[in-house]
Length: 369
Image 1 (cartoon, rainbow, N blue to C red):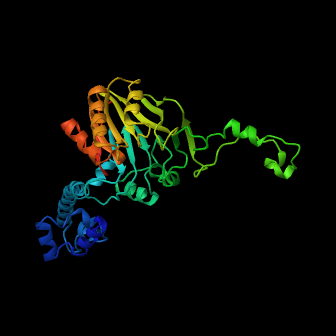
Image 2 (cartoon, helix red, strand yellow):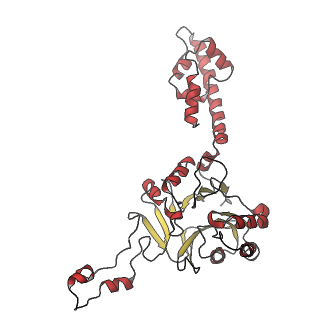
Image 3 (cartoon, rainbow, N blue to C red):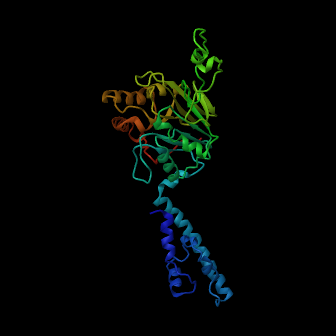
């Protein structure tokens, strides 16, 4: 049951007369002054009292009611956080990561789906990292968690796959002018059409009629590639770049079969305890991404996101987990999305109390800046 509906049902049972026997019993029980009563138009009947009440008695009565209203309002706020812990994700001014989209998580009103998204709040900045697989599911989770997408410093899209980009249409409906950092892609995210293609378009063959030439033989200038989000303000990243003080976009290129030459970007935040690294799918390889990130700082405090180890053989999963722990000295792990159950288990065993559960709806605190 939604809280608004529950409060309405309670309010219907509250008596309408401030000096009735039933009202006095409600007052005695501490229920008459409840904050839910404020949702009805009957409050004036309580605060004003009956016509025949003396002015002094009326003032005392109103004072008691106001005091109880204040106390009960505080109680209801506390109860709301217990009944609906998702509302805590909307807390402002904190250094934290909130998982908005994933396929695993503890029971809640959030919608699980394959994909990834996280809200990163650090040093007064609010950054949306990826947008999930389904715009309606993404919208539902954002609204359920009380996240205001109108107040973002920038968005990071890790790579071109739909399970990380599909909520972008909803983001743009809420915040059409937000800056979106995306990986450099040939004919992707509004990047310019390659010079080689433009040169071929502008070729002329005198043996062919004009209607067999591209654009009727009229020379064309370099143009941006098409995009499903033509009004978006993309800034494509080809090399690792500091986009805000202490905040970096780390760029890598996949050399793995199936995603060869795919560009993928990650987000790194500099904190007093080391770097916080958020990855999307780690198509270039999680070890490669970690290695390139250590060029910014040799100590990585924690890694969030997908490590793309779903179908990786168990022995290789174990090797990678040990490498992250022993070779690269990553202090904590908060894996999600495409990391895979065998890797979840291996990392949790290896990291023990330094393993951070980061399922859907989790709010994980970051080191103070």
